[in-house]
Length: 216
Image (cartoon, rainbow, N blue to C red; front, top):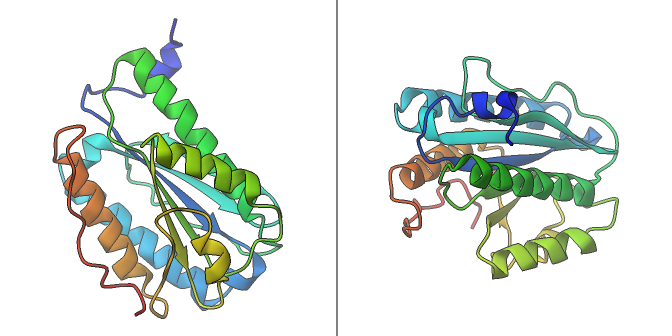
């Protein structure tokens, strides 16, 4: 039996396109980096709300990590309240952040199956400007298994002084560096990509836009 509260989340029967943003909120993100990140989130949210299909299909969850990891937004369709990262402090518990994001994906896809809602391959989108201060081996193994099972698409994006060598080891996809602080372009690319997926049939391969936000 699925709880009534869980069923209430599916007020329409459209297939769901889930995306988890795993965002670094450690101390090094304070200042211009945090400001640019929050401006990028505004762009993402406005794009999703402006598309009539996206706002019925794309579900976004947010995990922040600093000295620990915490879910700051559970999976839901985009609403009028735009999520923002309130502050940046502490260390860089990247491993915990990734594992928390993967846990959300696993729980959500189980719920989709229970309520009979079809879904696209989940996306996990990691953004960090540092190097992990905790162990990432367990997270790397979980990502490898999920990628081998074609259960999710994992993206790692490094900002400024991010340890790109460590990021590249997380996923078979490798890692990309953000050009300067072009978060708006990054999140516009993300919204365009997710909207493209949401307009397709579940299981179809969808070409992604050019990476105009990534450093060469």
